[in-house]
Image (cartoon, one colour):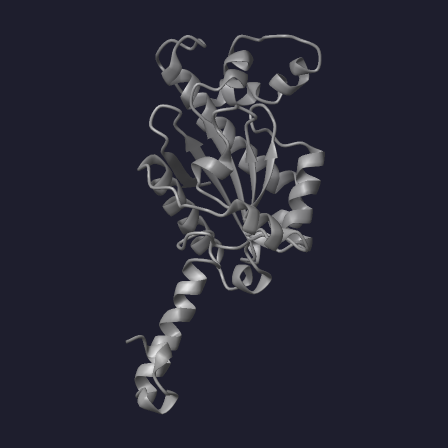
Length: 246
């Protein structure tokens, strides 16, 4: 017989308090923290605000593990859409590449409303993206800035090859410092995928440094412990995201 069916006074008070605490913890780790229970609704302000930057990163790591293990949560996306329609309280803002195979929401097993996601070829920063990040963190309460590159990135290859095409030329110029700064003793060409991936990681590291340099708002928030700026690399081959600090 379930405890809900018993009279209140039939429950031992200490047992009841323990059960209540367990239910609250489940709500935070599940419905309130990206995932954990099927058909979870959207993240609320209270649930987001209880999470630290490190806890948010840990939840993204767990979501990626579910993804590459083939154990993604069974979600009611329409319920999430309805729950988030009147307000959004994302826990993080991501800067990722536009690559069609590297959707952050999918590979981190996230729900509608869990993150802001800025996407641009080569995951480079610019004033508009920085403004978006400042809105996400300072005004909306996101606690993590995550720059995520990926293996076999076409933008990285283009920068290595000095490709030129309209506005793409200027975008690739933002990646070229990473090409020059990548230590590598082998073949430094776009045909060498080990070199391409090394440049992609260096590009993430440089972008993280540029965010701190070009946004005093975000740099101050990180210094105060309000947010954490982190990096990651997604493997198209394995589905695994490698998180790192910088």
